[in-house]
Image 1: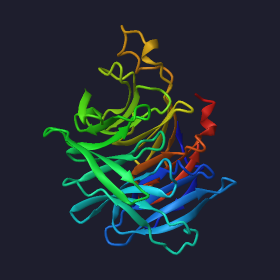
Image 2: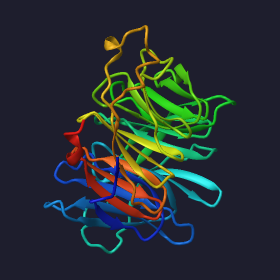
Image 3: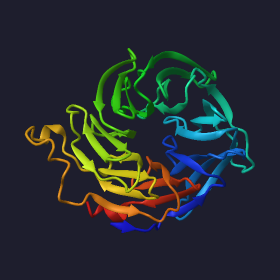
Length: 350
């Protein structure tokens, strides 16, 4: 189903590719996003949906010294977030704190509370454990995983352990298992790798080509969704990882990112075809699947595509579901356009 947008828009001044839900803000539907300008001073925008749900309000506008390639909000403190940034050929990562009196829109300075400075390769992402307060961070670069301890009150971070993914692997990102504080998945060109953070050793891997992004289902254990350049979207039950339990066609060009919505059994995907797709992702657990027909499960006669939001003018790299209002999501296209949509019109079609 093709559809335009009835969403609420917000424009950034520069190009951008990352947006995150501010999960720790339980009073408002809030998102945080950052820009990617090569020549100008970059910005971080804290955006809140108005109480009437009719407009996006800039709660805070902050200068950021470098191009922002990854941004993640701390799940237990709404004023803390992390960025991965670049300056020329060098990459860095840091944890920032928004000043308390940020209501004045006069670009107050962010406070840098930790620098993740142990990387020698291009940094891809910083991961926070999504399920509660935790004093550890994971950062991933082209070749390595790092586990950090973070003490935000003392403004200190320290590497606990590091492990290489191996010479044949070029890491593209990762996801932290919300059901297991010691389990992280990393993605690379030819596989998905699973790590035990206590030993920093690989526990398993799924050989699958061109995996670009992954997201865990926060309600169903063992369920992982992946976005892949050429083959679209795969839903995996990690107890039987030889084949996906469901496949979705994805996008007409690269599928860049996927986000699960366990509340309604939905998946959002975005890609370089300038569209966002909303999928019905209802899956049986592996206990309900017959072992004789694992290949057959991906092909369902019911069209899983509930809607395609196609009125973007550039590639869409950023997606975020609202934790506070699970029927609402934000998307971010490369031209700096944020759109917030409600999926309520499509819930009855599942």
